[in-house]
Image 1 (cartoon, rainbow, N blue to C red):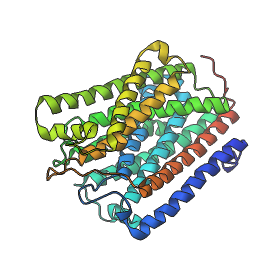
Image 2 (image 1 turned 135 degrees about the vertical axis):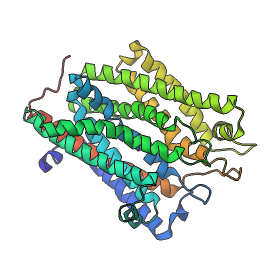
Image 3 (image 1 turned 180 degrees about the horizontal axis):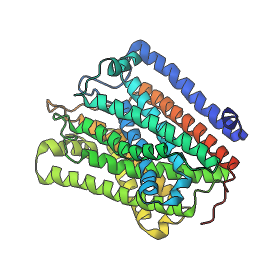
Image 4 (image 1 turned 180 degrees about the vertical axis):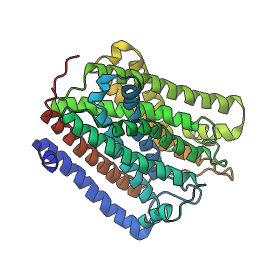
Length: 392
C-alpha cells in the first residue's frame, strides 16, 4: 500500500509537504506549551475548557457523519452510496484522530491520558466518551480497509464485516450523544443545561459532516476525475438540507425557551454571545452574527432544488454551512457555556496564539491522514477497474 501513497502528481507532493510543514511548526509551539504549561493558553479557573475542547466537540460530529451514508446503504439498500462509503469511513478516522489529539493537548501533559486507562471511572461521562471514540476508530479502520480490499477484488465482503457495519451505525449515534451528555450533565452551566443538547449535537453533525464529505468528494472529482455520481450528490445534498433545517429549528427552540420563559440564567448566555454584556464587548459577537447569515443563506440554497442541483452554487452553500456550524459549536458553545460564571460574573475567553497554532497542527494531522487514506482508496478503485466518469 505504501507505493500507492507515494504515487502522485507534484501538486500532491506539495500538499503533503505543506501539511508536514504546518505539523512541524505546531509541534514546536506545542513543545513551548509543554515547557511553560497551560498558562500559555487563554484558559482560567472560570474557563477551564477552551478552543481545544471546542474543536474536539465539532470533530466528533464530523466523525459521526459517516452513518448518514452507511445507514441508507445497509438498511435501505441504497446502492449508489456504496461507491463512496469508504471515503466517509476514512474521513471518520481522520476526525477521530483529531479528536483524540485535541484531548491530549488540552490536558497539558500527555501522560495524563493514561489516567483514563489505568484508573477507569465508569461514573464519569468523560470515561465513556473516550471509550466510544476509541471503539469507533477501530470499527471504521477495520470496516473501511476490509471493504476497500474486497471491493477492489470485486468480491463480496465477509459476513462479519456486515455485523460490524450494523454495530458502527449505532456506535456513531453514541459518540456524539455521549459528548452531548458531557455538556448537558453540568448543572452550573445554563447554556448547556438543556434536554435537547444531544439532539442538537446529532442534528449539527448530520449536516456538517456530510457537507464536509460532499465538499471533499467534489474537490476529488475536480482533481482526480473520480465522480461520486449524480445520485450520490443529489441524495447527500438533500440529507444535508433536512439536517441543517432541523439543526436551526432546534436552536430556535432554545431561543424561545430562553426568552419566553423570562429566566435570566437561560437568556443571559445568548445575549452575551450576540450583544455582549453592559458595554462589555465580546470578540465572538461578530462571529455569531456571521454564523446566522451563513446558516440562512446556506439553507436557502440547499432547500431550493434549482440551486441545490447547481454545481457552481452547491460548493459555496456547503462551505457556508460548514462555517456556520463550526462557529456555533467550535466557538459559541464553549464561550456561551462559561458566561456568566456560577458567581454571575462575566469573563471574556480569547484563544491565544499558542492555542490557534497547535490547533492548526492538529487539523493538519487530520488532513494528512485523510489525504493519504483517500489517495489509497482512489488508487485501489483505479486498479479495480472502476470508472472515473460515472454516468447515472
